[in-house]
Length: 254
Ligand code: PEP
Image (spheres, rainbow, N blue to C red):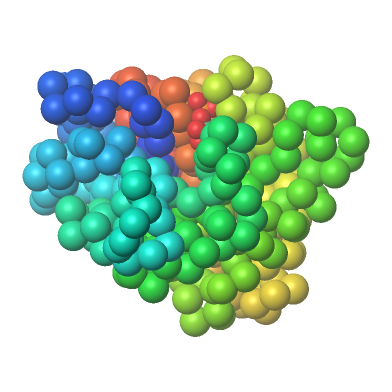
């Protein structure tokens, strides 16, 4: 099979969203990051900084993503943003079903599925996040949790749309905690995720899907994680706010 191009995506979460902060961080990233990276690079700022980020990143090797999108094209959905609005402002990617959305904002497997379908139909590449909580991990339920999240999240994604989907395996207990899954364990679960994708879409299609790891990835642990055969990149929270760290993770793909 062809080698999968790795992807490093930065999730700023609710940080650096003002024009001044976003400008400073984007400037730092443009300076620190390789101009011809060996991977695809995406940054996902808060919605308030997307327009500015699209202007700042134009012509660079860094693509622009959002952190969520609604499933309707427009309408009475206060506080939400549609896929067409995101492409209109210059986004090519969107994170869907992040564990923080699931934990704090009532995102379910079903709503994640609707959002992902709308994102892909709208021309975006969707990064579907899956991953077990600490409780589920301790009960040995990590694979069945991911399976249910994949089943719901991909419910409306037919085989021909799978090329516009990436999966991020993000064990909740590793997000923002400084606690990473070991490279071997992250690789095992990513392999299981690929097996689940193969059950639904066939081996060939599953082999083309990029599966990222997320959860306290940083410049120190990135190389070992990214060297795993089933791990095709990273979704980076905290370290994506530090240009030198984010750049080092990108260089770990070389
Ligand atoms: C994330 O929010 O997707 C994430 C992985 O965060 P952190 O890198 O800070 O653990």
